Image: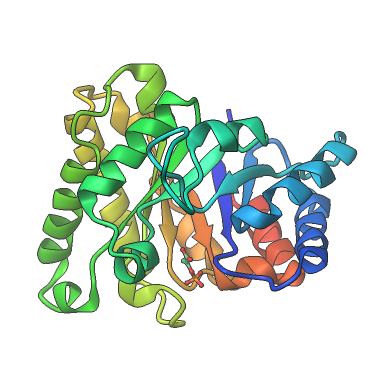
Length: 264
Ligand code: PEP
């Protein structure tokens, strides 16, 4: 079983397919030991190219899994512009980010929509990376306010999701305080650890299983890079990182993998 997960969220980058293959190739070349799982989430339009790059390198040491940045809750139908879970599965996608704060902010994604997406993605056999996290205004009120915000998000986003062990295990939660994303203002590592423990407790409650807090994966996201990743992942409760900006730079990716390797 792997110990840490490193997920690249490319967001709306890069502008060309050629560049996408280059960045993906670099991620594939970063030698990752068995205890580090890497996942790369390019924009939809590059998934196929990246999937075929992966197929051409079946023995690559740092073989990254493929993830998508969003999914719709229907497999097929009159939903212009949407991409369904079955389509992603057919491309070899294993993970999908759901509920990223940028989608909640710019696309008006609500908790009800996030909830439907999670149900559909899990139903199709995908692993879900559910993003939660408080805005700056809430954080200013203190840790308790931030925890309440995250607790409410988890309750709404995971409402009615099966607590079947095999399904619950496929839900990864990324704690991404909104004020830390893309700002360089990364969260305090000890606060992140406390939030990860808190999230695991909530998952135990929501999935009606004390063991869920042990089994579940909670990541941190928010201005993570090669320099600071170990500050977060040194804690047992923090199972990995969801990385935006730094994941597009081959040297930073390598540094992050190297930093995780040094952790005991
Ligand atoms: C993200 O996109 O989820 C993210 C955390 O971005 P960044 O690493 O750039 O802050």
